[in-house]
Length: 93
Ligand SMILES: [Zn+2]
Image (cartoon, rainbow, N blue to C red; front, side, top):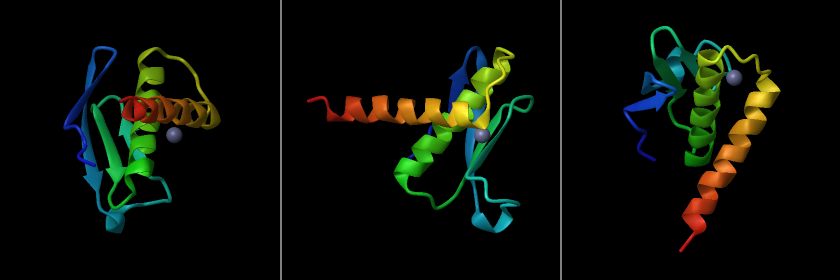
């Protein structure tokens, strides 16, 4: 899956990059940094995991943009729902 170079989230532009496993500092699949406008995903994930992680990090950034406090579980559930909606569009013929 080819990732978008940037994503607009509520008026903020985020670059989307991949980073190699070798520089990963923990078990995270991705990370986002609101102030620097960056979302980074670990390299080498399956398309499903990559998409889910991108949704997850984008939801983190949207929560941050609105000062909404969301737990990791809430963000993960929202990302699962977003992936389901995305898949359903792919199944529309
Ligand atoms: Zn998270």
